[in-house]
Length: 136
Image (tube, rainbow, N blue to C red; front, side):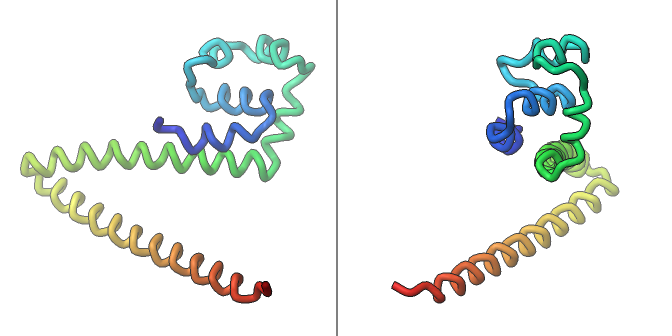
């Protein structure tokens, strides 16, 4: 599933907030099409709330911001895949600008992967150092 990260994160959230978030960003599941199509008034009645204030206040919390960042990361990844596919196809057809952009994307992605690997290695080293302090 392409949105697996956001779906997993939303599992931990109150059902009303989860439904609000999915409705706001039109995140589809096999069971929520009716919620995505609701008006604000219909949604409030369904969620047994008098106003949207509670949801708007929730948008100012760390919990909401973390969910938003997970959602945006997934969206950006899907967009990058789409752009990559377009550039790759044009490069294969001999488009000179696309070839240069394709090579730059490849270089940037390689550098990003190296940076991610370094970060993961440092995190593992920190975890190993923390383990050394344990007494048995």
